Image 1 (cartoon, rainbow, N blue to C red):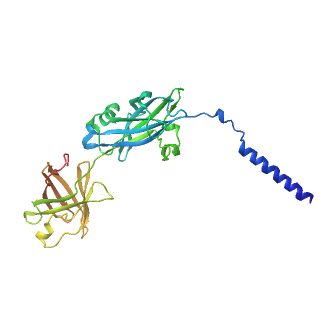
Image 2 (image 1 turned 120 degrees about the vertical axis):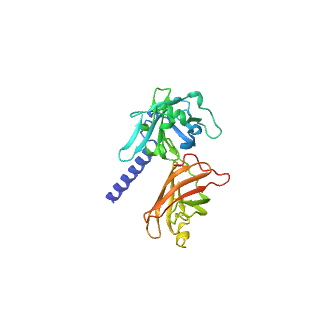
Image 3 (image 1 turned 180 degrees about the horizontal axis):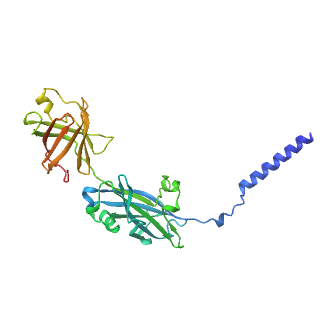
Length: 310
């Protein structure tokens, strides 16, 4: 009985002790410090079009989150550097170390909004501004280049917050969405899918002139690549009376056209662009069997061949 009573008393003491700690924790909340971050509300534009750098831009809408609903923010500095992957070498940065200031947002750029209590701002930086800030020219830019934009939030207490101030949860979690760094890629949109008229000359089959249509179908899993329904462009039918079969594609890498894949006999294909304008794309093709030809593919009405194909 004594053992039972003692155990019951100990359990009650532990219970009350636990409840008291839970209700009135001995933690000095008033001594906690608070920081600030920039929540990403909208990524309006986060790519540069290689074919239209003049009209390309990086644009965001940000929300300043702090203990005073964004009112501690004094400035937001935006820095940029250029990054390129050199095959077999690695990443090349311009400038080679650090980054350059391209824009500064002032406290007055942040304003109330109808969706939250925090102050918001929207801004844009053109591709030309970014290129100039890193000391390059548009002629120096290539497809697949990347511009890294890093933000630094300075508050009225003299503190600064940037990408090194946050962990992965704050940077990437949907609620916070505050990476303080945004990568803007130079992309090369490609829209070559379609059915086109062609003329095939100077070919393996006795220099016969072959006319017909060629269909290029976009490959969803490989943007910028198109399967070709007949990579011999009518030559097999003209020479052998057989339909062409195989899996050959034409790929568009920022205007650089290449051909890859094989026919039903395992022979691989390649191409070399001879000339290109809005109306006609002319190229030589050849396969490892030795078949070859020169093809002139005509653009369709209202859809000229894009400039820069090569």
